[in-house]
Image 1 (cartoon, rainbow, N blue to C red):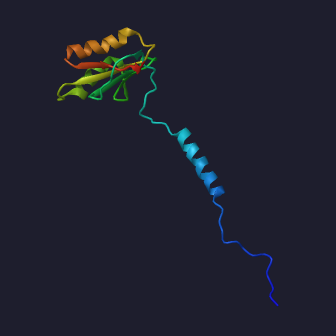
Image 2 (cartoon, one colour; image 1 turned 135 degrees about the vertical axis):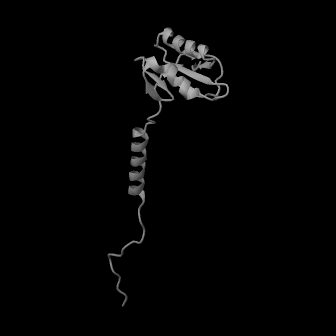
Image 3 (spheres, rainbow, N blue to C red; image 1 turned 90 degrees about the vertical axis):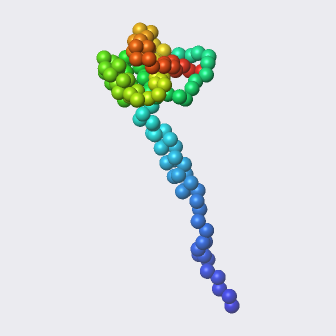
Length: 128
């Protein structure tokens, strides 16, 4: 007589709960991960093409805070910082990122500094 046990253990493993946890972790990290070096600027719109040849990036946000290569500086010392950053560079180039709400005189101030020091200036814009 052959007897069978009624509580046979299945050797299979269900991955559905593990998959749920992995997807929840993925969503959590995607939502919380921000690039700390990126500035959130709303650039003006224009047609044209952009270039990737830049030596120094100057950003001005709506609170009139100046950033040289994503490092905040005092606006009064921008010329000194630019001279330090572009010292010894061949064809020194500045890419200027001024937010849409920034007064034009702030951008012109940076352009004037570049003109006095023979730096090339590229104004960053959003694609139209």
